[in-house]
Amino acid sequence: MKIGISGLPKSGKTTIFNALTKLEADTSLYDQKSEPNLGAVQVFDERIKHLSDIYKPKSTIYANIEFIDFPAMAEDSQDHQFLSSNSMTLLKNTDALAIVLRNFADTILDETYHKADPVKDFKAIYEQFILSDLISAEKRLEKIELGYKRGIKTPALQLEESVLKRIIETLNEIKPISSIELNDDEQKSIRGFQFLSLKPILIVLNSDENNLFQNDNVINELKNFGEYIEFAGKFEMELGKLDEEEAKMFMDDMNIKDSAINVFIKAAYATLGLISFFTVGTDEVRAWTINKGDPALEAAGKIHSDLARGFIRAETFNYNDFKTYGSEKAIREKGLFRLEGKTYVVQDGDIINVRFNV
Ligand SMILES: Nc1nc2c(ncn2[C@@H]2O[C@H](COP(=O)(O)OP(=O)(O)OP(=O)(O)O)[C@@H](O)[C@H]2O)c(=O)[nH]1
Ligand SMILES: [Mg+2]
Image 1 (cartoon, rainbow, N blue to C red):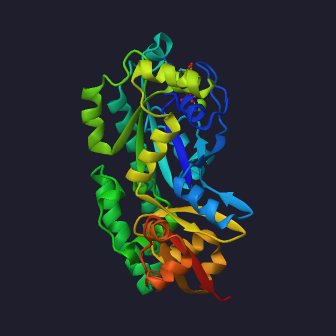
Image 2 (image 1 turned 90 degrees about the vertical axis):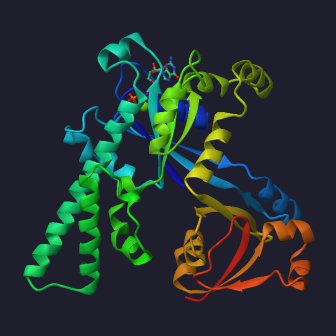
Image 3 (image 1 turned 45 degrees about the vertical axis):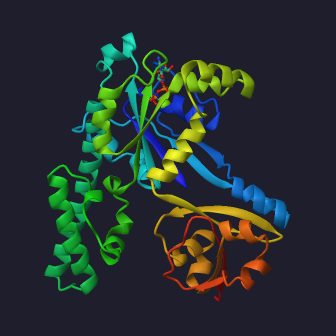
C-alpha cells in the first residue's frame, strides 16, 4: 500500500512523514526539496501474531505501508509546472493520498504565503487535482475522436468515450471523479489514467501544540471534503524520538490517546476502505492489504500476477473462525472451509490459499 503525503509548501509534510516513519528527513523553513522522501512502516496486527504463534513459519510478514513524502504542490492552480512534473507522475502512482494542511502559525510562513487557512488550502489543492484530471481526460477524448475519424471505432473505445464525457462534465463543475457512480466495466475503462480526484483522500490537519483539538470550526468545514485526522506534527515528530514511557507522559499531558502512526493507520484503513487478508503456512504467515469489496482475483494478483492469471479457486476460511476453533482441521469439520471463485468478495480476516495453474 503506497500512500502519498502531499500538500502546499511548508505545510509540514516532511514533519508528519518523520512522525509516522520515525525517520529523520530534513525539515526546514527555507530549503525547497525537489525529491520525495521514502519510508515504510509495518502495520502491527494481533491476528498475524496469533497465526504466527500457531503456524511457526520461517518468516512473519506484517502489512506494509510505504509513505512517499512529496515536494510541495504549487500554491496556485494556474501554475502548470507542478501538473506536468515528475512528482505528479509519482503522485498518480499511489493508492491513496494524505493531504497535509498547515494549521500552525509561523511569522515567516504567514508572511510568505498567508495566515494558516486549512480550508482554503484544501480547496486550492483539490482544484489542482481536478485540473490535472481534466487535462488528461480531454487529451484522451481528443485522441479517441481523432481515431473515430480514421475509422477506428470499437465498443471498448465507445465505452471509454462515454465515461470520459461524464468525467469531463463533472470536473468542469469542480466536482471530483469519485462523485460519479461507475460500474465495474466503466471503472476498468479508465483505470489506466490513475486520476487524482478518484483517489481516496485522508486529510491531515497539522496543528501545533497550542491549538491541538481546538479547531472545531475548521474541522466542520473540512469534514465536507472527506475523512480527517488532526496531529500536532512537530510535537509528534519529537515524541517519536523518546522512549515509550517518556512519550506516554507527554501524550497524557496533551490528551493524545495513541501514537501518530496508530491513529493514521486506523484512519487510513477505515476511511480508505482497506481490509486485510492473510496467507498462512510453515514458510510464511503474511498480511496483505486490499480494498473492501475487492474480489478474490484481485487478492490473488496482490500476491503474484501468476496467481491471478492462472486462478482456479481460492481456498478460504476466516481468522475469527480459526481463532474460535483452533485449527484448520476443526474448521473443515465445521464446514467453514470454503472454495471460492474469482468473483468472491474477500472479507477482512480471510485466510486464503490460491490454487492456480499457469
Ligand atoms: N509550529 C509548528 N511548526 C511546524 C509544524 N510542522 C512543521 N513545522 C515547521 O514548518 C517548517 C516546514 O516543515 P516541513 O515538515 O519541512 O514542511 P514541508 O511541508 O515538508 O515543506 P516542503 O516540503 O518544503 O514544502 C519547519 O520549520 C517545521 O519545523 C507544527 O506542527 N507546528
Ligand atoms: Mg518536505
